[in-house]
Image (cartoon, rainbow, N blue to C red; front, side, top):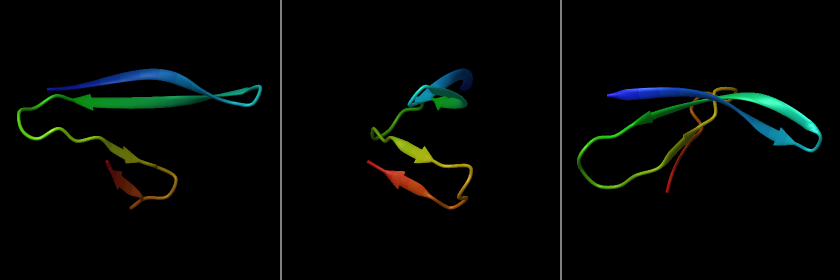
Length: 45
């Protein structure tokens, strides 16, 4: 099941719209950051 949350990120005095998608599943813990502006940029921590 996935949830989508609209929020903002601050860059100095400017606020930018951000969409956060969350999916909770069983398995090993993982955290992925995907930048939509540079498709293919995927960081796994």
